[in-house]
Length: 380
Image 1 (cartoon, rainbow, N blue to C red):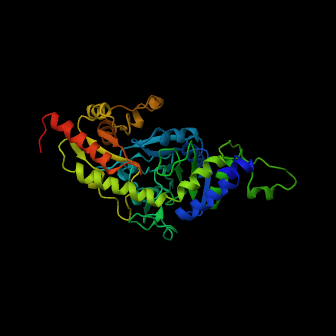
Image 2: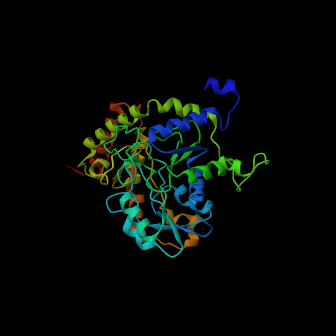
Image 3: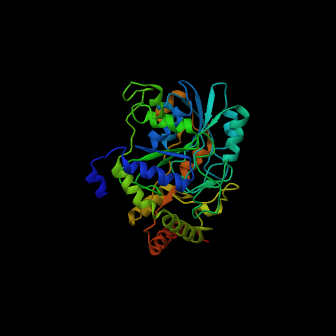
């Protein structure tokens, strides 16, 4: 950090370049382009991958708002599909049914502790001639053998040894929002891709459309603006923070896995708790890397209030499915259109999970959950 301050280059400088190289090595991606947020990473990726005004992109109805809003910001139209039975990823069969002549891309989202069904999504893309992009904002460390290419250079602490999430198609993204598995001290993100053209286009778009290697095509023109771009560059201060935290990322992922296993053991079979993540097997060829520990429970809002009153913070992922957000009212969806997404929104609750969480605190969370359901007359 001190060298950033002494250098005086605070944006898109040497630390950003160093972080990009380090993340390329860690993920095995051919290219990592550091940008100012995970949301901008999605917008830039979609544009670089060839999204045109009015093109449709199939996305799950259950995700963070940026999944769908990025499509709009890139000029496209989000088309929602339901999530898979027993999981939270895009259902390939539902995605297949949502394809129209205007569909250009399919964008599965990797949520919480595992990748979506990439094999299924890739099959839909192949059969309909679509471009596969991945909202892998939460997925650092997640890997899947469904992706083509050699195993990642840094296999990490997950059971899977395939390519890193985000590399199954045209590209993916990472978010470094402070709460993420690898978090900055503000907003930051990255695009990762094995496609040279996608990477070069993202680099142009995030730097006001200025040419990278394309400078060679415009002799005599200083700083040529090749396409209309934006100011989406990462700050070197954020890059310096991320480089420091990257050194302990493996240990942080392992600690999250230990805490998740502790929760699994304590909550499995508890009345009122419908599902714990450890009961849901990952898709073939993938491993579990826990960013959010998400349970599905009865009387979710009452349980969250009970825990809050006792000093235990929780988070609802997500309060409202995407198709029922007011900003997408013009798409004219109704309650019941995507029942699995709606059911997840009504039952899902994230419990405290971060590397510094003591085992005793995780046990106290479980004690309070057990006490809540016992107090409502539920017995083992």
